[in-house]
Image 1 (cartoon, one colour):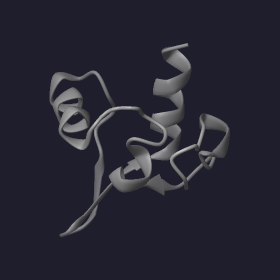
Image 2 (cartoon, one colour):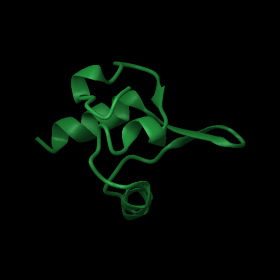
Image 3 (cartoon, helix red, strand yellow):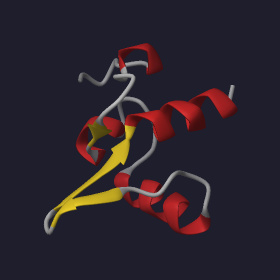
Image 4 (cartoon, one colour):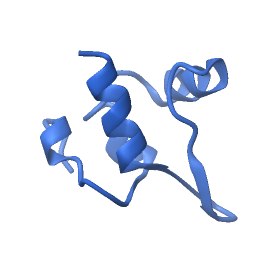
Amino acid sequence: MTAAATAIDLPKTGFIRSRDLVPGLVPIGRSTLHLWVKQGKFPAPVKLAPATTAWKCEDVRAWMEARK
């Protein structure tokens, strides 16, 4: 995904890593993203492996739709 990605470019299912999520789809920094997760303002990621964390595309899409 590129920095110009939109919700339409977000796959319907699957997972998205933070490097593809910010600032392309969510125009904030990574530290703000993790703060929002702690505060419940953004969906929580899932642990795919010991060193791999990602967000469900469905959760990100729902969050984006709710903010319209």
